[in-house]
Length: 79
Image (cartoon, rainbow, N blue to C red):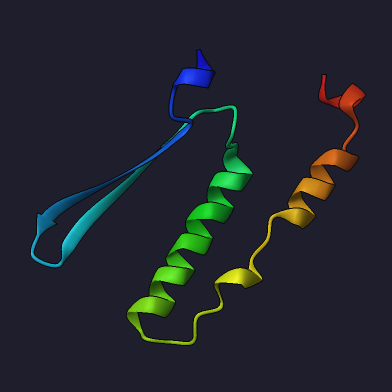
């Protein structure tokens, strides 16, 4: 029952001093291969900006173009 489950989970494991592992678990209904790639890419870019104390530009990434593209795909061909 997806209404009672977490559809996305984040776990951070401490491996050593200054060494961590981030595990992201998602339900297949909310993330496909393309969106998974975009989220990982955005997460790593934002982490690098924070780590290097660069200007934060977090709001520049949106998924609107991807969602618009998905909505324009032929539902008939997808079957």
